[in-house]
Image 1 (cartoon, rainbow, N blue to C red):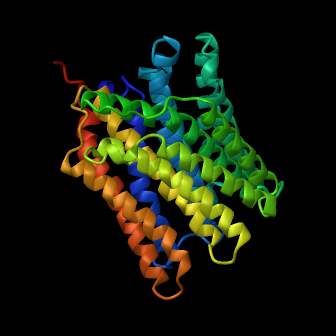
Image 2: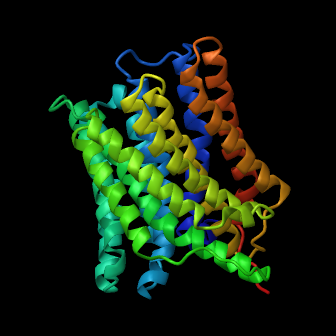
Length: 385
């Protein structure tokens, strides 16, 4: 089994992302409601934010990017011992941040920081060696994502109060990465599926409008990181949300409703548009809580798109039929319910704890079901026609 797992980057990292997502949210909720007792100086909220970003999301990013790089560069994939070392570094980081109150901050940083730093160096080597300059923005964004983790560690060392800045930087840099990569795969996979089904209308090709949309998002993210509470930042969020909403509509989502593996990609991107609008409204009105807009981005956009990509890539890269089963469709339904509930919860005072718990349950069920269905696929040899 081990040799098979380390033949492709998506195999161990998608398993890691699924397992950690399944465990991390229940662990946080049990602590949040005081059911589980942790060491006094263990910051459970910071742990939750850190491990969703630099544990769960980082594993998914590693699995996707390292699998895509050979197609981008024409170089051989990262596998076997080098891949196993990367996975070990990821696991080391999870243990380090979970036990920081016991092992101390220096040991925590020595265990947690290497994974993303080494991942950045590996991706940079591959892109530079393959002269794949088109994907240089990807390594720049992942580098900023890594910087966010460093800023978190500077705070746990009590050097500077920078954890909130680090989390904010990494979160909104990820929104650009989602828009960049999502802007490639969503219309591409949609076009291919529509062509197979003899459709006569297709997503609009990448053009100037897409460039303007991406620029608007980059400008907003810069403002969100530097001046998050300024009214101009809220207006920029609304503008970016509007432009990306139009971009989303141009991809003909209504023509994909019979294939869950396609429409879930659109749902993930739609959550990005919704999140941007909610962020703008939360800064301009008292009606929309910021936490709703934030979780529209994290639980909605990031988690939905990650599950959409992990399920499709796991099937495609192992030679399986790229078609959603009932189980896979249920995964998508569960994560959508989790996102809706998590965004709705801050709007209400009564029953807020119940809604939060239900959101966590549906989140956990979605990733637990992913592991149940896709672990055998990810640990078995590629099917040969």
